[in-house]
Image (cartoon, helix red, strand yellow):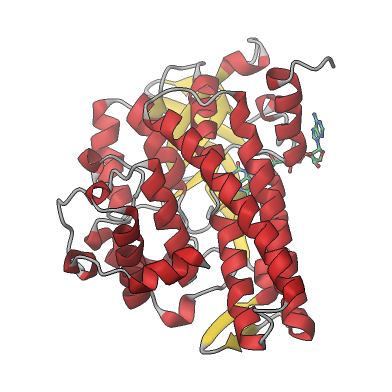
Length: 404
Ligand SMILES: Cc1cc2nc3c(=O)[nH]c(=O)nc-3n(C[C@H](O)[C@H](O)[C@H](O)COP(=O)(O)OP(=O)(O)OC[C@H]3O[C@@H](n4cnc5c(N)ncnc54)[C@H](O)[C@@H]3O)c2cc1C
């Protein structure tokens, strides 16, 4: 692994190892120095017993770590410095992701950081930005996304949750489901129908609500690995003040689609594929098959897929960081990352042999790896943020102009 070898021998500025926030422009470092410094800081600070779990960490277990990374000023690599982010260029973001995955950092409940925050910077009022953004980078508030409903997933615009104006409040009734982090979150952003007579997409409004609002109840849903990462919410006469609307009333579909762009960029990042491949590397080295020709050939294939993906990701991240729309071509990212994650997690299981059937952690040269957790994770990647079938439909219709 060329980049790992390079990283280990490159000297870096001591500022990387400081635990305090710095105003330095992180883009000013060479890629090699940045890579070495990022790895060193994550490796020094991220708890050993929370690495390579193959699942998302809960809000509570991640809180001490998120406070450390927030204090360092590294919690939001893609956010502009104005709002407390690192302001990284897309090329540096990729390096950040690669080194974080190499260390085996768990994914946190990050809907505020990767979806709601970037969307609010574009669509929110100044007051909404001041109210919500600083608390997201301080990891004071955890957010969840209330889009899907029991009868509205791929066809999201058929959602039935309703919002009816009553004085200065909207009264919300309905149910949301598959809400990642719903049972840990402090706030939810959600879509509700405000005009039943308009065309499907035209009567929807984008709201935010505290999860503590009276009438809002939450039920955890365990996933295939037995972890509870998502939930269902029931909203019964939940009253939301009018100022909790983001964007215009009945124009929520435009806001929702813009947020979906950030969501699809994020879920198209090489992160899950990198995580599984890093785990496969650890297991192969510990099991003595790292130099095996068959392993090397399979590893190289996934490695190159991820390299392709990273190049495409950088291109879309570049477009979006300039405030431009990525277009329907963005759908390809999710398909590629789901495929690469599948190949990487299959390679991981193959390399682990019979240990792969163990649902607990396996120890490899001092690193604990959750093999089955990593493997099961890839199924979600094919469904979340719009299934791969839906992404293929978008490409067929809007990129290739195929009939049907
Ligand atoms: C890990 C994970 C996390 C998630 N987190 C969230 C979250 O935080 N917030 C949230 O709102 N939602 C979340 N979801 C829900 C996710 O967005 C939906 O599951 C997804 O959009 C699919 O909707 P559905 O489950 O209703 O399936 P359906 O839409 O019922 O689809 C069932 C099957 O039919 C196929 N299908 C449907 N329509 C078509 C079509 N037109 N052409 C071809 N095939 C089609 C689908 O590909 C799928 O295979 C999450 C899902 C997962 C797996």
